[in-house]
Image (cartoon, rainbow, N blue to C red; front, top):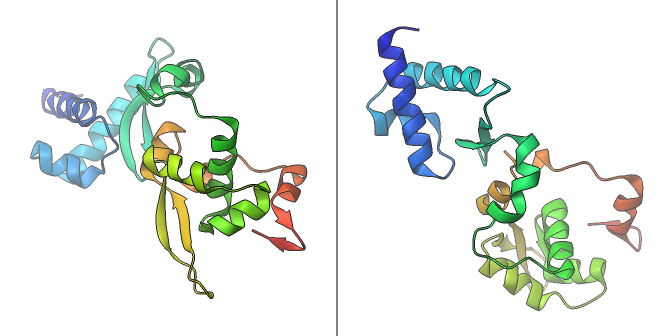
Amino acid sequence: MTKNIEKETALVEAILLMEGDSIDEGTIARIGGLSKESVTAAIENLKERYSSADCGLEIACIGGGLMIYAKREYWENLRERYGKKNDAKMSRAAMETLAIVAYQQPVTRPEIEKIRGVSADNMIRLLLEKGLVRESGKKDIPGRPVMYGTTKEFLKIFHLNSIADLPKLSENDIEKFELEGEKY
């Protein structure tokens, strides 16, 4: 590696560290005054450096951008403390509601309530306050209920690049999301 690419790699690493949130390569290039090719090469250098067994970091794709993150093997042990700084643990009801939104988005409050069998107003309000779900439009049916989906913060906390990276549901779990022959 030439001295120039070493400096560019160090600059990209510093940008990723300072941003603290996922960022795309084009933005990294703009911030660092680098070409997109240089950023791509620097990212590859960092991935190679972080692939070492004695390194606890990796370049993770989160919400369509890149960020420096704890390796997955360590993240499971660190998630409780660092997954959502300074927030209390979520209740089972909140996690159930979040799971329904994540797997069924876009989903309306009445659809969530049909699946859970209880009112979802408080849980949706809590998830909105925590920034884990957002309003994603209105369903084109009478009453035009609000539809909800997950946020970039949700992806970050659960270390996902996109919703497609959610664990696949088992047949038993899929049945829990089906009511009266309708799949939500």
